[in-house]
Length: 312
Length: 277
Image 1 (spheres, each protein chain N blue to C red):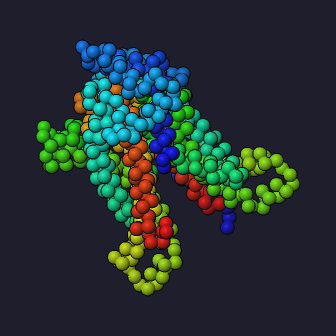
Image 2 (tube, one colour; image 1 turned 180 degrees about the horizontal axis):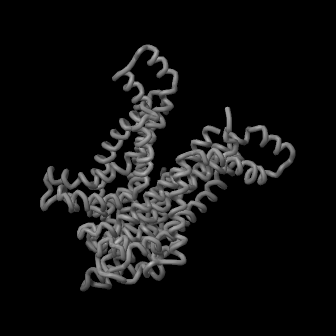
Image 3 (cartoon, rainbow over the protein chains, first blue to last red; image 1 turned 45 degrees about the vertical axis):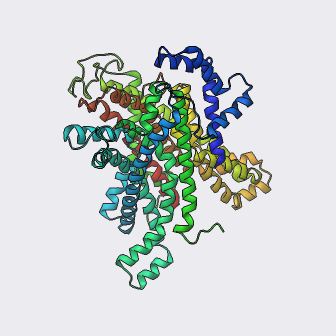
């Protein structure tokens, strides 16, 4: 896992140096354009010091890693919000992203499990046969496009919910929830299929296992029976939940951008528009951390959910 | 038992998922090829009134500067398909070679699978966004970059199949009779796992198309190419949703979804037929 983090650090280190011309000059020019009237000389010295630009490459890299691993990680000042450190912009945006991610995935996972088990229990009945191709379809819908459709239908035509932002003028609980409904609904809609299809597949396997036959022979039905099946189907879907976050998070970024939700996606998109490179780099670093932590969580949760797994 | 389908191809032909998938995919391929020789209007020039709703003259309406959405849709098909299939091809070549070597030569198994796991963990889209923000790639480079981050699935599946194939009698016979390893790996075994690789390749096409569209949407799409993703992105930049010009982005998004569903149908069908065989 540390290798992944290292790979991302190397990438972040190499990318500015791959830009045509001297990237320090590009950075300083960018800063000047955003903030005319700042002392050019001082800026240029600060940036050079930050990247240790006069040292040999290996020393630059060590210097860079040292800056990132210090607290708070120093990615340099944001060009647009100079002199705020890019790190603080990213951590603020991350909070919103994590809230959206947590709420939508919790709901999507629970719905997915019930839908998947239902489909498996009624395999080849009408609903299963209709739902399967529909879920395949939903699985491939571009999330940001679904967001645009939701805006047109629910925010513009029906006027039910706000189309952009995360709160009204001041954040209130009701306002925050109202603003979250549409983006969360989009994310649930596009992630539900994978959860449901995974659970459906696992449940079909569980249903053909010996203990189910025995349970049926014992005359078990209703809640106890569902409980047993549920418990056995949960582990793979929990893995799917946490391991899919690396894949998911990019999609969530695009949805946030669609709804101008103040999370990482919107931050990255505006940073790209303004060529605010330190913010883009900090965002990639934080995203990688989140993905790695969710993978770690998956590993740690295994033995709790499934007593058969143990690392001892 | 009468008229049991014998070959794989015959079984595929009987599979409803595969056939509907093929019909959908072929439709979009035809659209792309027709677009090469005939477009009703110049897709990038203003040819009509701004924001006109779908009509007989402009079946999919026009954009905010009066470009014909129908022509853009036909024109965008080729780049979208190019990214998808090129990226999948590169990803499959990398993945199959790595999986094959890891599975067949036990000494390389551990290190190669470690690398595979690392690449699998990398957050692909955020990484691509960052790379593209610094060095704005062309459409071919975009496809290759997507492939570099999406081969691990193919590597894993290939490896696990090679591991079991290695023990099978026909491979042992081949080895004992002195067939060179590279023939066993890239002819005998490859032929065996080809249908599986094909199914994975189709999922890879879907992933690449979605990824490219997302890059376009965030604002770092390939600079010179015009894809369905770019259409949605332009529509979003012009606030098409807020002025009610749904026709601008409805069709490109639906096309991505339908094409992907078609490809997924073929892939799922392939997998089911393989399992039955």
